[in-house]
Image 1 (cartoon, one colour):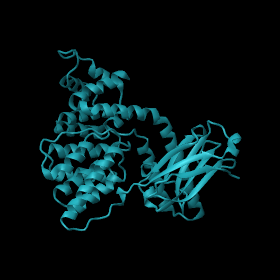
Image 2 (cartoon, rainbow, N blue to C red):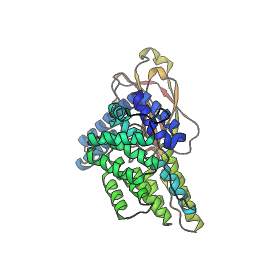
Image 3 (cartoon, rainbow, N blue to C red):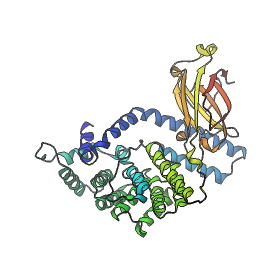
Length: 414
C-alpha cells in the first residue's frame, strides 16, 4: 500500500505540491472512519426503507411514490458508500475580472473525485508495474517517465478504468486538458454504467472538454453536460459549469439557479466555493437594481444536541451498546439527519446538519421545526424494539437556535 501512495505522490506532487498535504490528511481521516460510516448508512437505509414499506401498507403512500422514494434511497446509499473527495486546484491561463468566480469554482472542481474513485477501483499492482522503470537523474522517476510507464501499462491492459482515471487526473494537473479529456473518455469506455462513480466521471469529462476548449461552452461540451445531468440531475461538476457559463454571460439569475442546485449535494470546500459564487452573483444583481432571488440552500440548518443518560437507567445498559441520535419531521418518521454512537460515548455533544441528509429531498433546512430523539438499541438496529431506552425533545427550530438542545434518555420502550 505504501508503494501505491508513493506512486500517487510522484504523479501529483510535482504539479500541485502545495495542495497535496491536506488531501493526504483527509484520506487518512476518511479511512479511519470508513467502516463505522458505511455501517451507519446501511442501518439508516434499512430503517427508512422499513418506514416507507409501513406507510405503503397503511395506504398513506402510493405504490408509484414508494418505488420512486425507494430508488432514491438505494441510489444515495451507493453514493454515500464512496470516500469523501479531496478537491485539487487546476490552472487557468487567463483570468479576467469577470472570470474571478470561474477560477474559484473550477479550481475546486477539476479532479474532485480523484482519490475517492481510485480508492474504490484502484489496484496497487498496476501502479507498481508503472513505477518499475529506470529512475531519472536524481534517483526518482520524473513526471514524464511516470506518465510514459502508465501509458505503456494501459496499452498492454486497456480495460483498466482506474488506470485511465489516474492518467486523466495526471494530465489535468499538468495542464494537458486535451490529454485529460481523452483519458476520461477511456474511463467511461471501461467503467460499468451502473457504477456509482459513473456520473461523476461524466461530469469530469465535461470539465476537461471545457478546459481543452479554452473555457468556451460549445455544443459538444453542453451535450456532455446534458448527458451527465440526465443520469444525475444533481451532479456538482456539470451544474457548476452551467453556472460558470451563465455568470460569464452576465445571466446571474441562471448562475444562482445552477449553483443552488449543485449546493444540495455539495459539502466541505465545494459547498463553500458554491456559496461564494452565489453571493457574488447576488451582489451583481443587486448592483444592477434587479431582483435578487432567495436561496434557501445558503441557510444550512444546524442543531447542537447534548445527550445524557438518566442515572436511574445506568444499570440497564452496556457501554458497547449502540446509540442512535435522530432528527425527524414533526409530521413524519423518516429521519432528516442521523448519527450513530455507543453508550460509552455518553454524555456527548454533537451537531446535526443538512450534510447528514441521506437524500437531497429530505434535509433539516426544509422544515421549520423538527423532533430530536436518542435511542439506545439493545439489538443494534435502528428500528425501535421493546426494551430500548429512548429520549425525545421537540419541537426544535432548525434555524437561529444558538443554545444546544438538552436531550435526556429517560424512557424504556414497551
